[in-house]
Length: 210
Image (cartoon, rainbow, N blue to C red; front, side, top):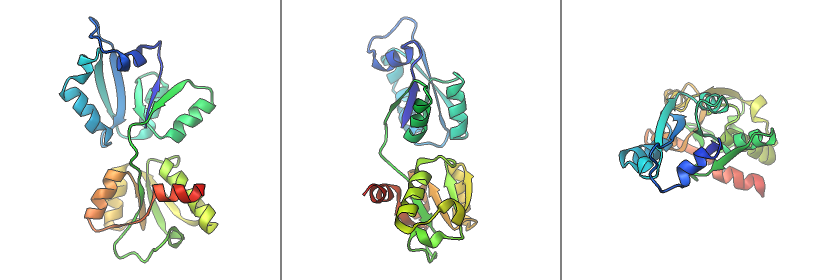
């Protein structure tokens, strides 16, 4: 999801206006350098859709989601990409943040082709690599799924390794970790490399709600 903070209405106006202003405002977007939203932002810049709609898009690449959140909260950027769980926590704390969904793609748990794991319960005692940090939505949903379906506490019953998606990707392929929770486009690369999906986050979310 994309989350936005309203600053005097300028950010909202940058998205909604179709008039070309004489002094176009700049919309600063802090996003992961390896995130898929870059494809959309690149399309906007390549075709001049920002200037056509009355603003200038300034893309600021960051190495991790935490860096984007710090930049956003410090007023150094106007728009970031983050999980809806994060913005919900910020709004509960009284911050006037607005979010705009931009993708329905989700991650999941990947294991090696030769792994004996058939369910998330089989990861007990193993090492899980997690892209996005301890508050990543995929990790939180899978924790709820494991607790409901297997009475399993993933935090205490596994060893977690948190890191950027490329790091988790490489660690999974090298066998340093027994399972990996990664962003969907890295999961696609992992499947091509011979890994298999143990569980999809969307399936875990449905099971946790039912």
